[in-house]
Image (tube, rainbow, N blue to C red; front, side, top):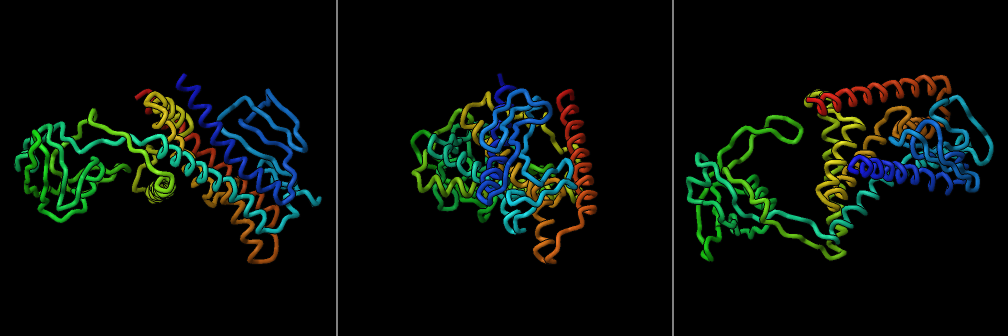
Length: 351
């Protein structure tokens, strides 16, 4: 059931991405010949207007084929009025941008939905302490509810963690214990730890762990939900961009690269954690699709944008031969990355 849910999620994200291209293409009068969810042999098709809507055998992806534009054979061109090639470069750029922007918009809508359903958050309750670290040495004990740090009220664990990292030291900490407020002074230790990219960094540590049973659900008003959705979409985008930068620069090893199998496996596991967790992970993958497709690699939307920017700047179209060769190189690069991701996924699954 989990894998089925993962495939539904992945197909939905691809559909939304291609729908963005479709809407923009039709807006500018470009004929869309095929709208397919999946690759390979089509097992279900329906002709609606000028477009053949299809479901294909391999559900891990999808595409639209516009008249006069085909990544599988970039040398094919058409100069009819309803062809992609006859549109102005800025119109083609908008068509290419529409897919990634649809993914960002979908992520925004998913985060907005989460804000209205209710966001589960950990309360600032201490469940465990390291007796050799500052919190225990200062007098903090299991069951204490941290209510204030350096004069700033604390409700949720994430707020407390942020104050520990960014607050002035020593920390002035107030806790609620047996209906009594107690004050403590804690000087964090600056220790080496790993961040989400596997890099070694230095962080303030006081040696406490949260109570995962002490949670609450936070619902936002609609206006607050819009702000929350915007911030989450922006944060997810920057996280993925930073990850790509570190991957390209070699700061993060290539064995951290994941492929479709890894995404499907993780989505399957997240779906077992609840509906809100699945929505949040779906939003993250949607942002990921948007960012990846904007990379300036021929065969991706970013590559098409670069080609059309070149035409806008120079007032002449790129050489068809050069475009064809660059597109083949782009497909080769993407295939290499997909195979590497698949190799890493298999290693993780059996390791």
